[in-house]
Length: 387
Image 1 (cartoon, rainbow, N blue to C red):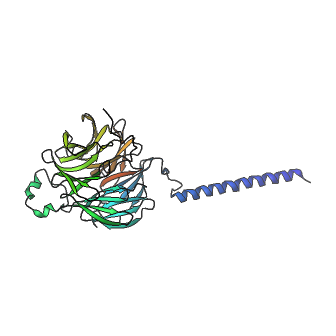
Image 2: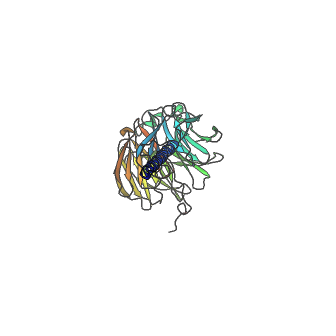
Image 3: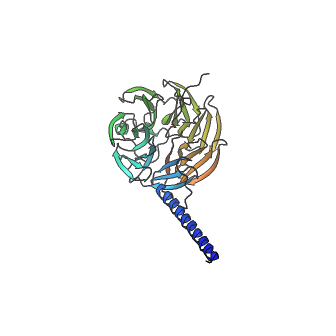
């Protein structure tokens, strides 16, 4: 017997077996990637590392940003024009987007991007806030469209009854997929916030310069706060992480208003020109305000209300969100067709992401602090600190 020939054949057989096994492993790896929906050449991080940001564009749809790479990985078609406010469900499976053209909200599967349902909510829907299984949607039935009037212009229309149609907050049951009731606000309801105990709904009403507080179950009006003596056109509204304080931006006052837990106005704080989106950071020790005409994201100390820094921004920057790890802020700048990314330690711009078609709102999943949403806080984070 030729042992040399046998050994040679054995070596070839072994090499062939190794090659086949390697090819099988590569094939399995490719299948796994396909199942996750991640292309082999993609730099998309698996969910759970950085999370995702969702950005509405008024003249487009929804852009999906991978927060690990700070790059757009998907575009969702909302099947209607004029997407603005948005919110994500607690499990991250559905994105709810207000669409102006068809007076509805679009319910979108965040995995496939498919529009599962469009639910009529009323004329000119704007803000969306999610509370458990319910979506709360503000609207502007009195708005004529176009840019907001200049200071004082609204006074010319004081006798025009058509301009004072009370707006409704639509309450949508997301399991049933239908609007189940309405809460009456003022003309042109804008921002929506929930009290820390979940029992009340706080609404800014820009057309009649009020902030109204409602029982969240019955919709009953509990309190009305007039803002005119402090400033006009209340827009953004935010509760502090510990639930002890509420902030409301006054676009035509160049201020934000500070209210205690009983909605008593305790002071105002000067801001740059035309403030809109507002939020605390997770720790509750800093306040962030997006100022449109000032072209700055302003940072304030939440205890002293002293300004810490002005961070330069783009054009018409209204809404922003922290990343889930709190290391960055993403600011949607409509007339710059971009999302600006800032480092939260240095308060400096770290990246610019091109987002076309006039970006309007932005939220993340996992949920984070921001002007349109609120992170899920731990008991320690939501407990008032003792002086």
